[in-house]
Length: 243
Length: 243
DNA sequence: TTCGCTCCTATTGTATACGCGTTTGCCGTC
DNA sequence: GACGGCAAACGCGTATACAATAGGAGCGAA
Image (tube, rainbow over all chains, first blue to last red; front, side, top):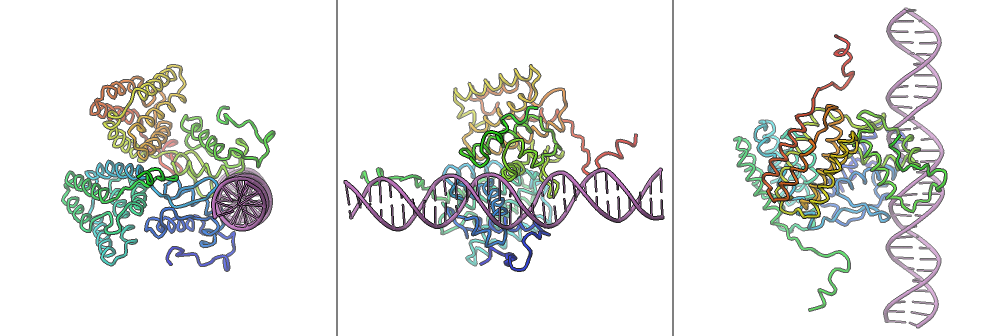
């Protein structure tokens, strides 16, 4: 039970209208839900009923709707008109698009990152990579997935281009969703030592090498997916029973 | 008075609660406001009061807030906590980021576009380019700006990567905002015949050439901007009245 | 026994009401 | 005459109430 994090049933003590924090509270709830999705605690297809969420987090549906819309715009949840919200189940096509986009942007960013990376950055990134490896070893897939996404996002930020970095972060979130649907349970996307190796290239300022390595890295992740189309509506029937 | 476009004061005739279209209506209003911003009918810094909009479009503030939030997430409007919404005034840094991003993505997409472009695509794009030229000649800057953004967006879609195409569209919208702030009144971003020339390369399948041309095209636009920092808070005052 | 129809419930979409913060104009005082 | 405080109003943030719709369950007929 870790997602409410700060629910505290404020219904009881706090006055309903008394905000005081307002925006921060929303941000915390947003991150709570977002994390739960990225860490696969909420699986693709899971329904997110508004009043259930509003009760869990102790705010009214109005606030929940706002957060849900934001998540929908980032394509982490799907908002079907009269059916409510559910965790997005990426299609195979979307998966391909996302990884192609990551290939283009993350690789393209590497030279600039290699140019600008500082010792402090390296230290922080190594720490993240280390914690990711630990989590992986300890069998905590949730934590590992989140750390991996955070690693890629942080890396992108070093480029200095906030717009592209934000986009990369969103792509990583969606990638996490893709892994949940198409990933094999056996191994996660990122190999244990890939991130460390990458940092090595960056530390030595070898932008080109880092770029090539990132390309391989992403290709490896994508290749590890098992893209099985599983059609939508009454999918096969003919196909299945025609044999 | 051109921005309402489809207001029709439905308050009088239509019942308030009777939806029937609902989502489409929202979409139309969203596009209305979005277009007004992109076409510079609403200038950066312009305030967008919620109840004014709700009255103009004949829906309640709830719906307006939803739309405003969507626009904020696309960074066309800025939502300051207790101050309301206003059209975003991009900073110089954001401008650089946006054009760097366009440089990376749009150029990177060109080879694939050259590979996949069809005769129908070419026809549609040529038509858009023609209309853009006409608008420019007729002095209708608003229409020209919108058509230019639509041209770039359409082009990106041909690549087949919906994710990247959507991102390019958003970058183009923001570019339009940047032009409004930093652009010289004299000439718009896109030169008259650049788009036609680009289509020529694409038609002949010369992806590399198209890529290089797009790069020059974007660099030309960016170079035409006059980036003057104009600070945030109490921006000039000292600077202005010190002369 | 199965298919179809109808009613019901659950859940979202929309509007409105209320409270708070911010701002701005005004007045009193120094 | 100018500066500082005060008050009122404007406008946003949140919650709640109502309306509409889609899904499902139950019942009846073939």
